Amino acid sequence: MRGIHKRLQCAFSKIKEEFDDHLNAINENTNEIQSNYEYICKLDAKIDKLSEQIDELKMMFHHALKSKIPGLHDFPESIQLTPHEKEVFLELYKLNGDKGTVTYQNLARNTGFSEALVMNYVTTMIAKGVPIIKAYKNGRVSLKIDDEFRYQQAKRDIVGLRTVKRFN
Image 1 (cartoon, rainbow, N blue to C red):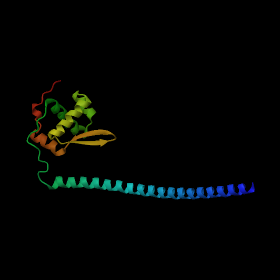
Image 2: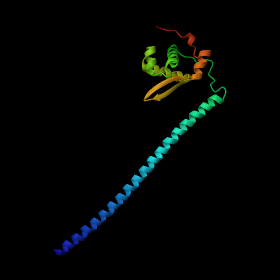
Image 3: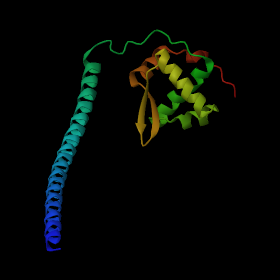
Image 4: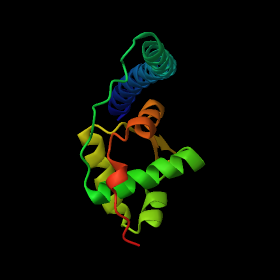
């Protein structure tokens, strides 16, 4: 009986030793994973900073190009819009002057069109070459007509607002 007890004790001792080795390996791997995670977090923060700096550089570069290159804002002589697109454009033009930026809801309320229809008209106008700037703030889209285009529109009537008919 004593021999069996000794062999069992020896076997359990080996098993305990193997478990301790596994536990040490797990702890070492956990430490390595934690170190890698911290390093990735630092890299992510640096990437975010770089992304912000690139965005700033792009804006500065674009602004510098606008002011230095003559004719950067060469707009076509005319852009053909449907009567409903002209109504949406006119409201956007007016509200830009009053509020600065406008939402789809503002345009829908002022034109009587649904918000989905206004979105469709804005997308179509952009595709036709009307420089409408979309900005996303707090999950909402703000719309603005390019300042130079507003000036040229007032001067040359590019979209033909003088032919718009009001159906009120």
